[in-house]
Length: 475
Image 1: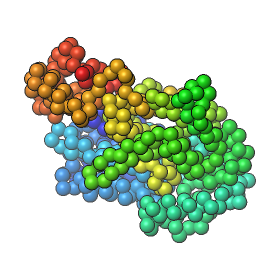
Image 2 (image 1 turned 45 degrees about the vertical axis):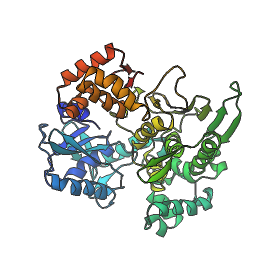
Image 3 (image 1 turned 90 degrees about the horizontal axis):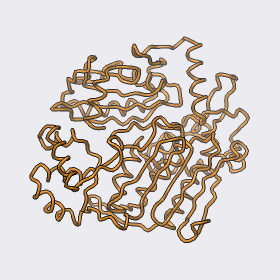
């Protein structure tokens, strides 16, 4: 989240999807009422350190970390928020003040705070506990929008792969030594993960489509969802057909493993030193890509999800329920979980990180794995991700190895401000003019003049639209 985007939210003011809280030195008592209402309605933006009229008051610096920690802790406390929901607050420096920004996505479940169910409208949060018709409508709307919540009342525990329960507990233990699933039997674990629900339309209880996709035996998955499959294809030599293929029609836990094995089989690994730790760039990139392919798919649609490795790029496609359209800008986007229950489950077993981190991490590591390139994420009815494996042959790119040469060639030639702008673009191709101005200490208008000069001399160019595009330094 950038200061520029925060400014837009502040100017918009409080609304159905925007809420301000002062939280000068501690959390407001009604913060989780707003979080609960956002989860139950259509998600929203929560800004702490801001007055009702949009004036940035700021949070006392010594209190910021405690407030941040309290949000995370309380969001995972079922007595405060039930069912719990993982939130990732961000501390933002806005001018000379600190605020906390929390993006709250729409949830596929109905949540309560302190035992009360809250909904949201233009006037704020309102308690609908005890209003049977409104609560029922809320449940029905969630169930109709999120196909992962579809209930199958005649499923029982014998329809699930029993060995998967043991494996999932092991993965959960690797994330948290005292994970609560370790002390639960299989049925309790399923209920705790939100995989067993009540159908408010028929009055029946049962395991959900998410439960089938995560734990179901292969024949049960095919019975419930005959079109379910993920195609992994290598198409390098035989571009009319394929060189290798894995037709995956199993549960999502094992699907993840098979897709990662396919990636490791056909793509080289590149190790990278991050601090004192060596990491696998390939695994860091494709862990996010594979997780996204499995977690954020609309499973009710028969469009086959696919991962295709070509000579110059890797492409993934899956059916989607888009909130926006076009290229995703990692600096300014609001991540919406398409299957929140499945997403939370994958987070519990360490297969994904916080919501939205996949896009940011992929941009971070892709330019190192294949210098001079950026991934593309396209939000539409079909969600598409593209990971370049080669830079264009006719295109010289700026890398850490030749940056000093570029800096001297262009920066010294055009002056100090231009040199700083080039360095900022080198470090963040998605940086905005306002963010540059804030870092350099000049006006946004002065930055735009410098950018115009650099573009005129063909030193830099804008790739893609103003919103969603990025800067490129020409060599």
